[in-house]
Image 1: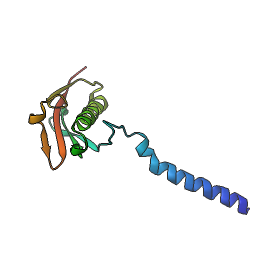
Image 2: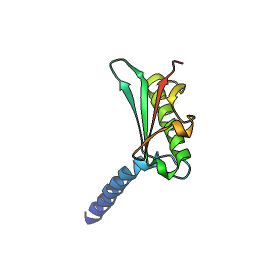
Image 3: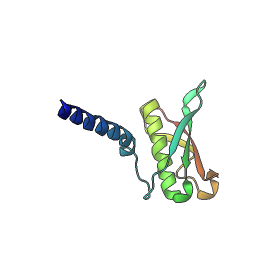
Image 4: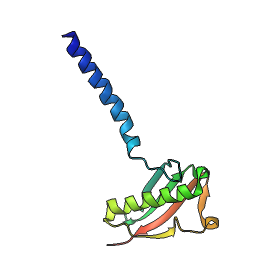
Length: 115
């Protein structure tokens, strides 16, 4: 019986450790950095098509942050509209001088296009 308890304990600990690391498996590196992103709808009552993307820690790499924002916007549109087509108002291809960067956070705004 003690052997069974030890094996069960080892599996329980392994499951907990695997659960903790699962989220990091899906993170994507951009220009050698991980960026925390958040895409959200602008006004749920109007349409889900209009959204913003926030990218934290832009000072780590502006190019990486821009690509992380593109990725987050694309993922948002695919999940909500089934398309990766985006009309960016301020996006990854916007001139650097015109980007919205406040408190080390980059913000994009876009609209998902119908397929």
